[in-house]
Length: 136
Ligand code: THU
Image (cartoon, rainbow, N blue to C red; front, side, top):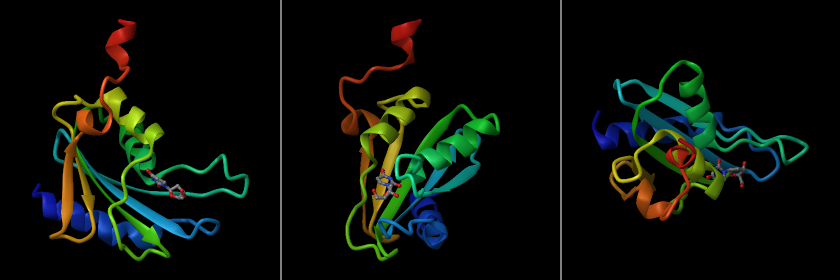
């Protein structure tokens, strides 16, 4: 799957965010090792703390269906669903990625549009990280 296609899937998914409190909509498109794509959105909650981010939503959907290998994630977001800037993943989502992804290989595309995106490895966004191998 082409990067731009993955980015387009995230952009297309933005309206499905449930963000009645922050009004900040986020969507993620996660490309699995087998080529399948899982979409996630932020889902807020009146308790605030029960809110889940778009990236974790995508990962949990995929992992719950048995996926364990991941290649890349495209992320976009903005106030009221209007993208004006890059939307980097929060620290908790970076740590969830670290559970399943090789830091030097997993690609993170932060997108303003299909053509305008910034590309990072997980290692760049989460250096000197704690991962599953520490417990083996
Ligand atoms: N949000 C995400 O979905 N992903 C991130 O990595 C950053 C924050 C959501 C959570 C909340 O619904 C809204 O953005 C404002 O923080």
